[in-house]
Structures are given as structure tokens and as C-alpha cells.
Length: 400
Image (cartoon, rainbow, N blue to C red; front, side, top):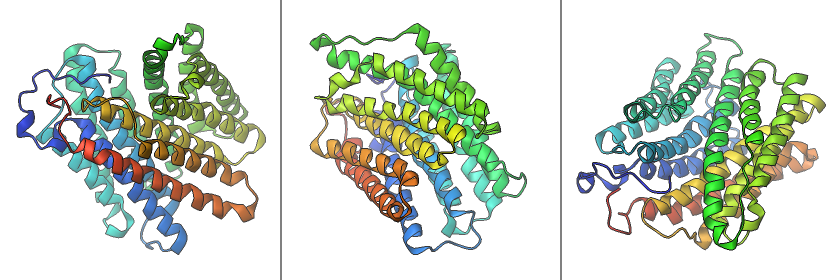
């Protein structure tokens, strides 16, 4: 994602700025969702109010953070990266507006206070990911980029995870929502593993190369990282608390930690736009360690889940969105103090939420509040800093 593909982009000025490139809408609205959906969840926790007809409050919260906030960021990344990988025209204009409308419709459909019948809500919510897959398939197939075509498989599996959740909500399958969430989280972790393995060493090498800092990537580590992360998905879906699942998680934690150590991120402490990437990836082995200890030693499952979601996913989303928004709008790769404050606040949120299940009972509510308010503050600062960037033309006058 270092530079956008502008092939065939003669129609830029006629298209509203928000729909000239995929990252503009989806990076903006991933931030909006992060603030709005978590803010709504905090309201539920504080007031205890929840519609009688709706699915469980915790299930809705988990679904929307994954298929709302995270999936929006994934869409923005892929809609921007695929044109760069293939040299093709980016999805823009009416097709991008249609994707945006599908994503928004999904959020409205499953919002508990709209009262939409679950069958209708399921159909609407399930439409977005296949639409995204079709938008990405054409350039990938046309360019013969079969290696990157694996992302189409991952999108299909994300759709399957969402389908399992809705089937339980429709009372058509019993006990499948947990497997659906496990599949969804596992697929996003796989995306993090693949994309992180590409961008972290490249960005670190580019950023620290002038200082003589080398970045190591060991083939003997790369394959186990991918295999173990992939193997953890069916293991977690089938038997999340089994000894085998715990051992796979611990082995994956070690592999990811060794991989991260080779990238030498601690040497990037003077560059916030770099160190936040390494902090985000550091949460991956932490989450896998906690997941392994859940299976083998009875540690609360919520600790590992939130180390993965609030720690790894959200931190890497914030890191990539803030960097890519600058890069793809022709601006210097230097983040503002507001953005650095957002990085710090999100790290506080991840730490507090991960620790909360492990704390004495009297401290849990305070930790949850600390995490929630720090999260909302972090993404509010992101929106303040980046909404003007995403809603403005490129600084260098080029289309995109």
C-alpha cells in the first residue's frame, strides 16, 4: 500500500471525494463505528437497558466490533491495496457507493433498537462481504494475481462465520454462533499474519534503513507462523478448551514472538508511525499465550479474546489507517500529537480490557470503564485528525 494505483483514473474530479478511493470511506467509517458502537455498548453497560426482542447484548457487541469496525477497516485496506497489487483501476464512484450503502445497511439492520426482523436483518448484513469479494475478484483474476487471490477465500470464510452467527440468532442452528465468532476472529488473525508479514518488515526497513538497522525474516519461522495460525482456527472452533488447542496456541505464540523479534521494532521508538505497528503486532503473541493458558490452565477466555481484538486488531487498524491515509493522500508520513495520543490511549484501553478478567472483582468495573472511555477517546482523536485528510483532495493534486 505504499503508493496508489492511478491506472485509468481520469474520472476522479467527477466523483465525490469520499468515493474516489476505498480507503476514504471505509477508514473514516471504521473510526465512526469504533466510536459509535463502543459508545452504545458503554451506554448498555451503564444503564442496563436492552430491547426484549433483540439478540443477547454481548453477542451484538462482539458481532458489531468484528463485522462492523474491523471489517470496514479490512475493506478499506483491500480496496486500496488490490489496485496497487494489480495495476488496475480502483473501485470508485457508484460501485463504491453501493458497497458503502451495504455496509451501513448492515449496521442499521442489526442495531437492536431498529426492531428489524432477524431474517431481514440477516440477509442485509450478510450481503456486504460477498459484495466486497466480487469487487476484488475482478482485478485479481484479470491480473492473474493468484497468490493475493487467497484473500477472496478469507473473505468467503468471514462470510461463513457471519452466517453461522445469524443461523443461531434465527434459531436454525444451536450453538453455532460461538463457532462463527471463532472462525471470524481466526480469519482476521490470519489476515493480520499475512499482511503484517508483508508490511511490518518493509516499513521498518524503509524507516530505519538509514540508521543501519537490519530487519530479519527467517524462512524457518515464516512457515510455522502461517501453519500454526491456520491450524488454530479449526481447533478453536471444534474444541476451544482442549489440550491440543492450548498447545497449538502456545506454539503459535512463540512463533509470532520470534518473528516479531526479527523485525527489531524496539529500535523504532523515536518514530510513532513505526512503533505503533510493532506494539499492535506484539499483542498477537500475548493473545495467543493467554488463549493457550485458557485451555491449559483455566485462565479466563476474555483475557485472550480482548488481547487479540482490542490489542492486536484495533491497534493495527489504527496504525495502518493513520499511515495509509497520509500516504495515499500525498502527505508526509509524520503523525501529529493527536495521533500519538490516540496510539497511547488505545494501548491503555487494550491493557485495561485484557487485564480486567484477571483483576479482583472490586476492580473489574473500573477497568472496563477505563478501557471503554480510552477506546472512545482514541478513535475520537483519530477522527479529529483524519476526517479532514480523508475528506480533502490529495495534497499533491493527483487523483485518488
